[in-house]
Image (tube, rainbow, N blue to C red; front, side, top):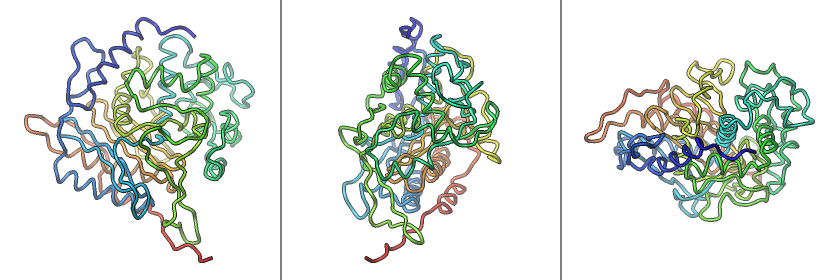
Amino acid sequence: MQLLSTRRSRAVVAVAAALALVLTGCTAEQGYTYTPPEQVDAKLPGDTVTAMQDAVSQALTASGASGAIVGVWVPWSGKWVTGVGTQKPGGGADLSTDMAFRIADETRLMTCDVLYALADDGDVKLDDPVTRYASGVADMDGVTLLDLCNGTSGAGSSEQIAKSAWLNTPEREWAPLELASYGLGQPRIAPHTTYRDSDAGYLLLGLALERATSLTASELIAKYVTKPLGLANTSLPGAAAAAPGTGAVMNGHHLNAVEGGYDCTAPVDITTLSASSGFTDSGVVSTIEDLGRYAQAEAKQVLRTEDKPARFGSPLPAYDGAPSWFQATGGGYLAGSMIGQHGWVPGYATAAYADPATGFTVAVVLNDSTTGAAIAQYLAWELAAIASKAPAASGKTAPEFGLPFTAEQYHQAIADAAITCVAPPEG
């Protein structure tokens, strides 16, 4: 693999220095390639915080989670970064904002960051065939690395087949191609023209990038994402089963199904897990401040050294019948003007979205994965709708910014997605 180009080296230094100022209320010095929006260093207004607290409380009840960690940054108004609830139902330690957790599908964005960095530097081409780097993969003729990033390879998902193994044997170490094979073995759809949520595609992309560079996926994400952005608490761990950090950790859980619903009184702790179960699809660990910083920088695409092709320039409907404002490409989703991702891994459900023009950013994690990604996604959007209406702080001006959905819409969506807690059978 070629060394970083001089241009990329300059850009990395500039971005790292500039992003040290992100979300802090400071502005970058002249000459940096990226100047983050100035963040008001204050709490959001009390009415806004109260509404967001109510939203988080409802999401905890609906999902069966005992706690959440939330970050909301409104550059013109203030911020709300907090832990809500406890490590387990009925008590236990309070959650704090320094706790590490698994970020789930936000990992996909980082994997695509690596692809675009390598393409910008000329080390790979976006239209390179997958078969050049991943041998022995059936039915991949004509599929490119960009298809894997964009979700247009036509491949299916491994999740439904592998889920029980993830939950029952969390310490199991997976080979990327073995795990991807469950999705690759699903019936295909025509490539290039339709978005399909495919964890197998991002697993295969990570494997291809490793083979293209002779670096591990962990090394690639560190080199091209976390180190340039100064994300000291973010990494893709190795395959050995471990907690998502060596310091303070948010414990992850799931609930056992019982007749009529779920046993919410005895969550199963699944904090210790092999990151190989997610790899370059969902294996990265982080903290809420790092995740917010990353989401804001990612929406702006500050890591790019080339302007074209525009990574989020040609999105496709996120699913058949999706609202016109909800689209997918580039490893993420576009929700109105906001760019981000949402997903789940055993123990955690997450979502992080940011507006590239204003720097408005929302990130959430729930400490239970029973309901999958939906409630974390809806909560992030509900919080975004609430916070987007926060008034400008003294001396500041609110930008022309709005969202194509309402807080009420996703408050109801969370209620509709709520699990049913029932008493476990006796004996």
